[in-house]
Image (cartoon, rainbow, N blue to C red; front, side, top):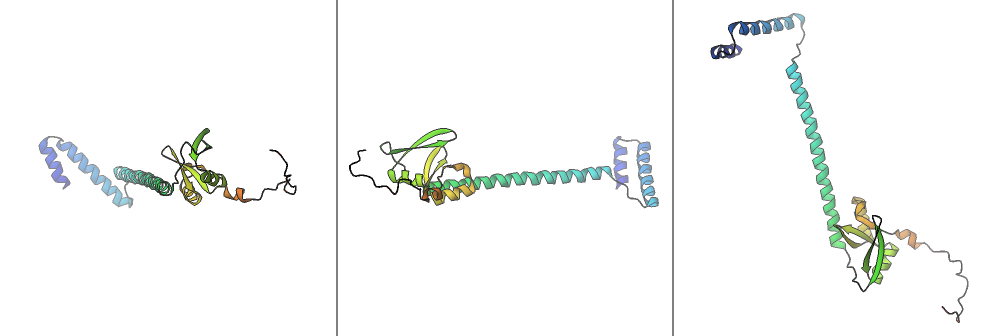
Length: 181
């Protein structure tokens, strides 16, 4: 087959007969040397091709890992959005109590009912941020959101801290009936 190619190249005028013979002799010497020394001749082009294949496979693995990571993050955000949208509680209007909280070193305010205000203060409810809007969700939902990505939780008071009995120094003293406030 190599002779057929050489014949075609000769006919096309791309190589001359001397160069064809030199290439044939070089190949013959290489094969003879390999047989006599029982050594395998390293084909540089083959090695470079194998190395390129390995590098491409490694790049492909890294790209697939990044792609899977992005898809996983997208799925987690979708789960968080669904948790918030399904479980959000209604907020109050301008006539209700204002609840102030901190978000990224800025003081923000939402209007809530007295029951919601007490629930947030006791840690039964939490404030979360979804697409620039603040929503109120129950504590167990906030815990699920925090497991997935805690950046969505803006305010979650510790319910255990609020359940502790406060030692009141003046608890043993009676308040007089005639005390004016």
